[in-house]
Amino acid sequence: MTSTTDTACPSCGGPVAEADLFCEACGAELKPGKPAAAPGTAALDTDTEPTVEITAVGSLEGGPVGPCASCGGTVGADGYCETCGTKAAKPRDHFAEQPAPWVAGVCDRGIRHSRNEDAMALGADAEPGSRALLVVCDGVSSSLDSDVASLAAARAALEVLVVDHAHGIGTESSRAAAIGARLKAAADAASDAVLDSTSPDSPNPASCTFVAAIVEDGLLVAGNVGDSRAYWFPDDAEPVPLTTDDSWAAELIAGGVSREEAESGPHAHAITRWLGKDAPDHTPRTTTLELEGAGWLLVCSDGLWNYCSEAAPLADLVRQTAADHNGEPKATASALVDWANAQGGQDNITVALARV
Image (tube, rainbow, N blue to C red; front, side, top):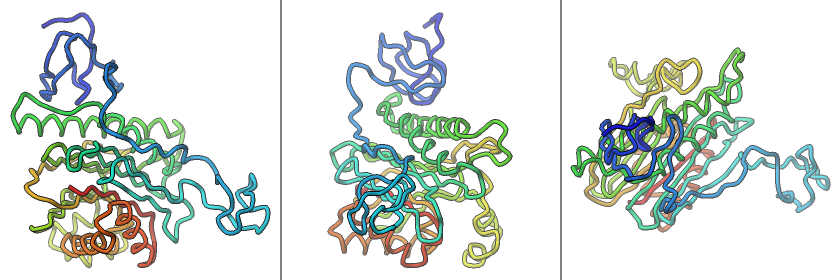
């Protein structure tokens, strides 16, 4: 198979020829007679739209929109109500996404921060348990424009993940490898988006964490860079942490320090890997899990797990909260955000859930 035009695999970004039926790098099935994307871009099937639904959240970067929440008056260009003087919330301060009834997320500024530097991007097929894509990015507060970078990163990653189902070469191991390769390509796209959000001469370039989880027909693949996390909470089995933090605290825990001591110290949230211009490495470490029963997939920022770090009590919290809200993902995510704010809301909070 030869070609004079170099193209890229839509799943992993590896080089393929136009005549290739499968990517040699990840095993993803290629559409015969249809060129793949040019290197560095995402390829979309032009014959049929992707089945994954993506919530249209509109612009989150602008100023306040709509009437004043306190009195219904007009909000002026300065962000304050012209009638009662109340400062209006920005769209980015609190937003929700629900691409399908079984997948939803809520992203909130919290109580103590002046802006929301968390971001998420979600996609899902309509059939419960079939296919879900959850991405969460947490901007590093000490860097410039981290709120812009995190949102751009989450959206760029989702654009890669929605391209197509990963089939591999027909075996479960090859399908897992293909999904893992697509997740890494999504991290590459997220990293590029962060770089595009950074001024070349910035003294403190934008940076953020990255975590993504993919459910495809009974297979779950998750990967992260930084300290945003993913968990699998089965109904009838022990909870499964899907990610390991890239943080100073995680290194202390690995060295024998208790979790309570490590995560309460002065450098508890100092991360050792991130996305950004000065990042040492942005390749996510991935975990693959075959799902054998019903449960909850949780992807979140540290604004939630700050107050409940251990997997078992966090699983209990999610299950009880879901039970209190009839198992509805959006209401459950919103209630978990409210719970984190009730604990102090020290950080931005993002909770993304899929009920499998």
